[in-house]
Length: 172
Ligand code: S3P
Image 1 (tube, rainbow, N blue to C red):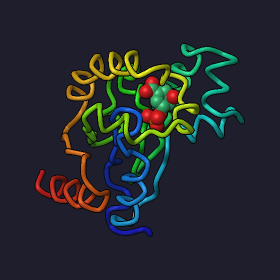
Image 2 (tube, rainbow, N blue to C red):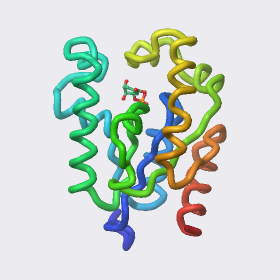
Image 3 (cartoon, rainbow, N blue to C red):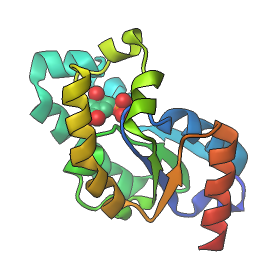
Image 4 (cartoon, rainbow, N blue to C red):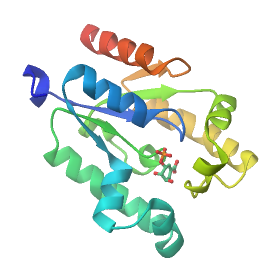
């Protein structure tokens, strides 16, 4: 922990549900000696409730406001960390770049479907059915691309993805 990069810019991972933001984030944190912060977990801890319960009891717009609030806090108070975001955060927080360097983990929709098990789907309130989720995926591509400083092909093992992120960031 606590390397010379500890107080540098944050690295913010974005991408659709199931793109591997949390696993890549944890490995990236391990490799770079930074702390890892999961924005969904942050919200769950602050609310004392799981995301799907927040959606059920308070509705999506309430959850989106919590995402905006957590993004404001991260932009102001978090430094030198690896942050994984919920798949919808880039659609409601206009300038993720205010938090740090934004890395988009891109994965074809078919791979996403294959990765998310039935059990995992039940934890994701927006994963109603494949057709609806595919529409959401298509709608979000341009938003992810616009928000990102760099885009990474996430259809590879976690270690390979992390290696490429480290290389691309050191070259930029
Ligand atoms: C969402 C993605 C989820 C979670 C919430 C909404 C979305 O996070 O924030 O269920 O709108 O795509 P993951 O991307 O980690 O599954």
